Image 1 (cartoon, rainbow, N blue to C red):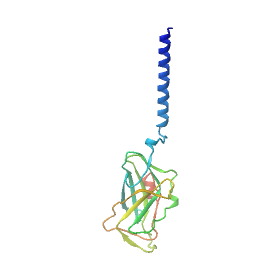
Image 2: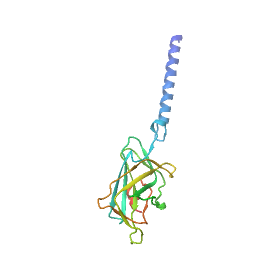
Image 3: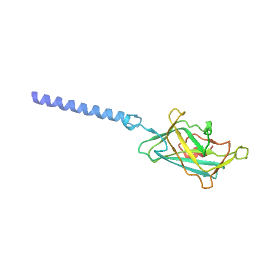
Length: 181
């Protein structure tokens, strides 16, 4: 074999090996489980989602929060919604039994859900009142902090009745899971 042919063969082999290495690394770093800097998923918040609050007929005294990812990247709904009705000074507690096994993950266009137990069904709640505004704050990965901007979904014109038994579910991947609490 001539020296020129050997050099060309080595060059082509080296180029092919390099191309395969690049393809392998690309497949590895951009695979479905990858967390590369350019495609890291983000935390869901008011600025990359649309939040709707809708009273439910069943179960009674409940409201459904639906959060839809309007962004171009996958976002995570961590823990539970920190809801604030009117001028409340604190957020209601979460129903611990509703904690899902995994963080709710929303691809662009997908929705996540949480249920809000507005008042005691038997009338035993205290400090009942009608509220006409709602802010929904989103938690970060640690679950202790609010991140980004809040969502301000519209409530019915007549408002919603709440009392001190107010509580929320954790974020759920499915509607059925959210309304069972």
